[in-house]
Image (cartoon, rainbow, N blue to C red; front, side):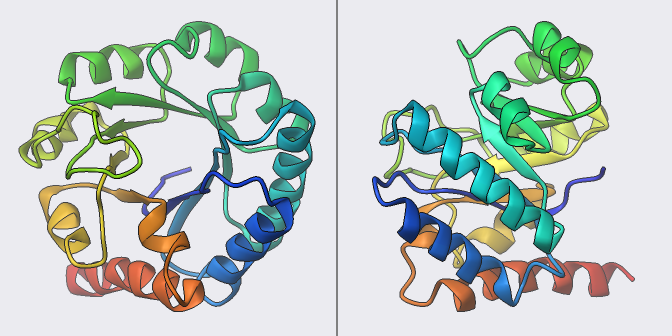
Length: 213
């Protein structure tokens, strides 16, 4: 599976109904083009709530043909029927995760470090994420990853995800720099019209595809 396009990450919320509604609104008219994946991440939810939300999102994503990736939790990803798991520093060994999940997608956060990305790919990561590429309200203390890193990382041979502070106004610059996917949270889910914002992000990739052709 070659990831390219919008890589949406769910926002932190205690309201499961609102979360599912917002995800469905985002996918409703744009999931047929320009989506790479949805990552489930909710730091405000307890164990039972996370399990229920992950299962609901897995079913929703399957209906739209969008891969669901669970953040930080291999066992939750498997139990929910997700398509993969994403691990950051301190979230577990990538080699062990690859052995546990088999052919499911495995992603790795690599921050601003090409050497971490090389090790991640060697351990079986299907894609790597760099960031924060811009100042991020979600993680204000995150290290900054220069856009030049994406050109350097092309030789890794896996999809490259950019994350951190990405908005509709700067996303095109990130894509031109070499990112295959743009990861967004608030720029998508805090928009007044989530469906329209999702279409605007996915259209950036449709434009890139038509230009390349």
